[in-house]
Picture 1 (spheres, rainbow, N blue to C red):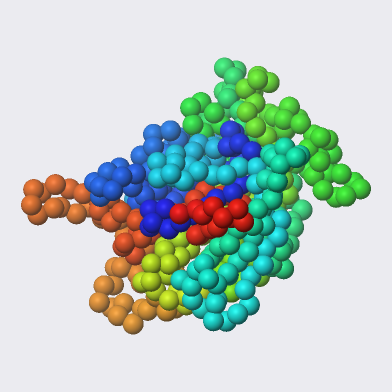
Picture 2 (cartoon, rainbow, N blue to C red):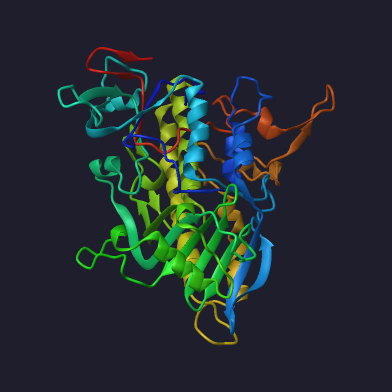
Length: 487
C-alpha cells in the first residue's frame, strides 16, 4: 500500500518484533510475490525475495520413513515441490521474525513504522449507504471510528486516542478481536490431533540422515516431521498422545504442564534407531497445539472493515500454508484497495476479495483435513493396519503439490475474471497467476524474467502489491483527536 502512495497506519499489540519460532515455511508462489516487490523505483532492482532466499534454507527434497522391525527406515525420496510451473522449485524456511523483518525494513525505507503496544478497544462503522459507497468523501464524512489503547503509556498519561479511517484491516490472528467485534463466526471444528513443535540446533550426536530434507516419519511411537531451517537449525513436529499438556478442567492446552525437553524425548523415541538431540541452550522455541480447521463466515463488513490471515482461516501448520495464505490474502486485498483509493476502480472491486479468498480458504481446509488425517494415521504395511499405504501417502503428497505450492490458485468467474476468450491463449489460464517466463530484450538481447519487469507497485495487475506483515490493524488516512494528521 505504501508503494501505491496510500496513507497507512499500522498498530501491533506486540511490544517488540518476533525473535524466534512461529511460521517458517515460504511456498514457491509467495517467493514469486516477494520477488515482485521492488526496494527502489527502478524496475531492474532486486525484489525482496533475494534477501529472503539468501537467509533461508532451501527445502528441495522430501524423505519418507516408516516403521520396521528395528525402528524406522527410509522408504523413498521425492522432490518437495512437484508443481511443474513453479519458478522456485523448493520451499524456503526461515523463522517468522526474519521474514517479517524483510517487509518491516522495506516499509521503514518509505517512512512507515509499526506502532507497537497498541490495541483497538472499540470501533463504529457508518451505516449511511451514500457514505459507504464513496471512498473519497473524507474527512467530511466519517466512515470508521476506531478507539486505540496505548499499553505502554504511564498511568498519568492519556492512553487512548480516536482514529478516523476510510478502511480497517484486522490481521490479528485466530482469536481476532476485529472478527469477534464484527460478530463473524468461525465455521468448522477442532480435531483431536495434538502436536508439539520444537526448533533446535542439533548436537553432534545427531545421526538422523535427513535433517536437511523435509522428512515425514511414521513410527510405532506416532508421526513426526523434520524441517530443515536456516543455518544448522531444524524444526520437529511430533504427534502427542499424552494428555498431560491439556488442562482437565478447561480442556485447553496448558504449556506449563509440559516442556521442550519432553517434546524432544518424544521425538527421540519416534526416530529410533537414529538419534536427534540438542543441548538445552540450543532449544530456540517450542509450543503445543491442537489442529483446528475453521473458516470465517465472512471476511468483511460493508467492504470497509476486512479480516485477513489467521483471522479468516485456521488449520494445521505442517503443510506450510498459514503464513503463505495470510500474505496472499493481503496481497489480494492491497492492490484492490489501492485501485479504489486512486479512483481507478469503484467500490464493487472490493467485493471480489471475499469472493476469491474465502473460496480459497475453504479449499485450503479441505486440503488440510486430508493431509492432516494422512499424516496423523499410521501407515498400513503388508496388509496390516487400517491407515494409508506408503504409496497412497506419497501419491497424495505429490497430488497436492500444485495446491500447497500456491501456484495453482484459480479464481472463478467474477467482475474481474472473465474466461470468455480463454481459447485465445490456451496455455495461460484465466483466473490463475501469469506463468513465469524469461524474456529477451530486443535492444541488447539481455535476458530478464518478467517478474522483475512488472514491479508490484499497483501499476500493473499482473503482479500485485504485498501488504504489511501480520499485525493488528491497518488504517488509511488517519486523524487523531489531538488534531494531528497522518499524511
